[in-house]
Amino acid sequence: MLKAMCERYNALQSQLVDLMNKNTEKELSPTKKRKSETSNNNNGNIIGNSESSSTDEEESCKKPREEIIKAKISRAYVRTELSDTSLVVKDGYQWRKYGQKVTRDNPCPRAYFKCSFAPSCPVKKKVQRSVDDQSVLVATYEGEHNHLPPSQIEATSGSSRLGSVPVGSTPVKSSGPTITLDLTNSIKSSDEARNSKPKLDSPEATQYLVEHMASSLTKDPNFTAALAAAISGRMFSTNSN
DNA sequence: CGGATTTGACCAGCGC
DNA sequence: GCGCTGGTCAAATCCG
Image (cartoon, rainbow, N blue to C red; front, side, top):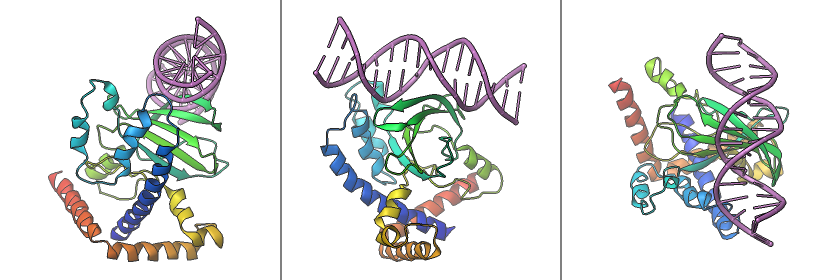
């Protein structure tokens, strides 16, 4: 479990760096569509902050609009089979598809989902294949779940199991924003995997990644604190149940 | 038979 | 005002 956490942590960290770089570029380019929906919120979720996210939104209550409420936009990149035509991203939640649309910038249709696990849950999800790599699904999450993921509810009621949530976003219940795991970027940023071994599933590449993750983790003092907080939080939640 | 998915229609925002 | 586009609705259809 620790090992898995370490790997995830580092994957997130590298992705964070990538996203930060990307975003500074993207924000400059005039890609804003309607309103300013996307740009305000991306900043919030990209930061992998674990604690200090809640107060900022309330501060922005200047405009009495609902838009503020549906902040928290995050993105998850999920690699799938090309033959897999269903735009389904298994992230531990239960989704109901309510629409599909072919957009201008991408010939692949975009699917719209609402969280169907809790009727009052405002979270929406858009899933579309990446233009660059059609084997990659880009899931865009809007809003925050006001309930636990079904997989975790099962876990806490019975034998707790981490890893029931497949790759992609990690809906671990925390006060922070939804975490985005950009698998494609972490693959691409590893030049070994790009140049000589384009397949991540080769054991050498995997081993390299793991070693790289482990080494950078041990150098990062923040990880210790984050790990301790995560473990104690988990222990507390299982105790209280 | 009930819930989920599909898909065309409709609506609202934005640029010209 | 008009057309384009993304997002949503809802009737029809599918499926377990």
